[in-house]
Image 1 (tube, rainbow, N blue to C red):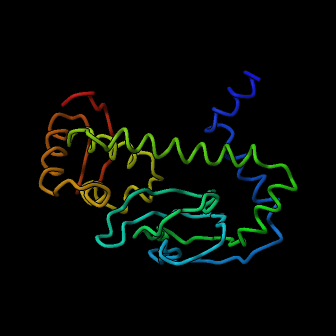
Image 2: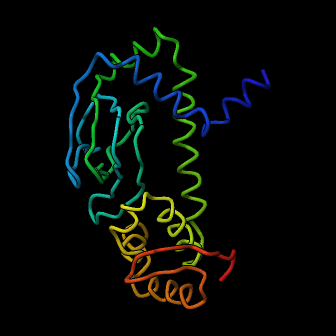
Length: 213
């Protein structure tokens, strides 16, 4: 039992296999859609009863009134396993060309039950929780520097072509409530201190980001 619990909590290493198993089981049902970059493909205000299997691409959750970016996620991913009890002002937009399979919720749940895939569902939901807990730890009740530090690490983790397609200032301000001037001031000091290397606004390298600054 203890070994099973340990494995269940290891959501990061088991996530890809769990998603692939669910994808394979639902490969022959639902409808496949392709979305262009910046195209909105889900609105929480709509009463959709589908599970979305994000097969390729990058997408993000935005707060609709002010278009504040809440969270960015890459495929493979599954969305809709948990029903939202209310209708928040949140939309999901493609950040790149996106391939999505839309599966009726009842059909998806029936297959999950028939194939005994609740363990895989738990892994997927566990990773979602992990991502949002980490995000809250980094963004709630932290000072401006820690918010900038968190987003610099996110920016660094992106593929080179994506990292070079946006400035560090734009990347951070679009994902936080920090002002442009505050972000620029912190980035300038980090760059001057050679903690990071920024050229023409683009993050080239992170040498070292201290715990306090």
